[in-house]
Image 1 (cartoon, rainbow, N blue to C red):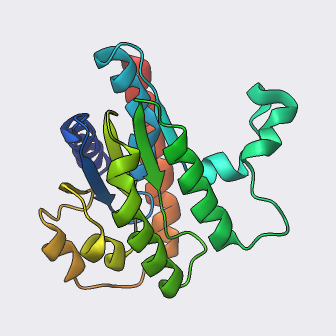
Image 2: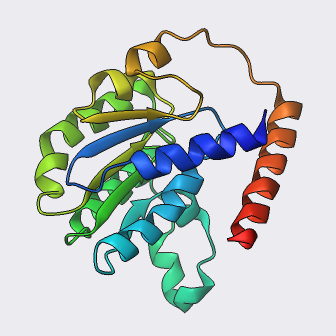
Length: 200
C-alpha cells in the first residue's frame, strides 16, 4: 500500500461525504480507513453544524471498555444471551432512535449475520431508515457486503480502494487477502495518519 496515497483518498472521501440529510454508502477493503472516517465525522458535524454529533453503531462501540461511561459502559455492549445478529439489529435500531437531528453512522451492518439476516436488515432499513433520519444530517452506512450495496436504498456511493461506482466495486475481481500485508499496511497507515494528525 502507498500509505500517502491512501491517506489522501481517505481525506478526499471524508470531505466528500455530504451532511445534508441523505444516505451514503462507504466500502473498502479491511484496513483501508473506513472506521477512521466514521470516527472523525464528529469533528465535521461539530464544526459545520453547531455542535451536532455522530450517533453510531460499530464493533468499537459494542466491544469497547468505555471507561468514560463508568458502570454504564456495559449498556452498549452485546449481551451473552442474544445471538450476534440480533445484537447487530438492536444496535442499529437504538442508534436510529437516538439520532435527534445529529448524523448517523451504521458501521458494518452485516456483522455476525447470515446472508438471510442481512437481507432482512436491508429490508428493514429500506422501510425505516429514511423516516428515522428525517430532519437529521443524514446517514453513512459502512459495509463489506455486495448484497447491501446492491439492495439498500441510498443516495451516494464511496469506496476507499479506487472504485468510482457501486457497479465497479460489485463486479471487481475478488482475491484472497495477504494477511501479512494486511497487518503491515494497517500498521503503516495508522502510523502515517497519527504522524500527520500531530502536524496539524
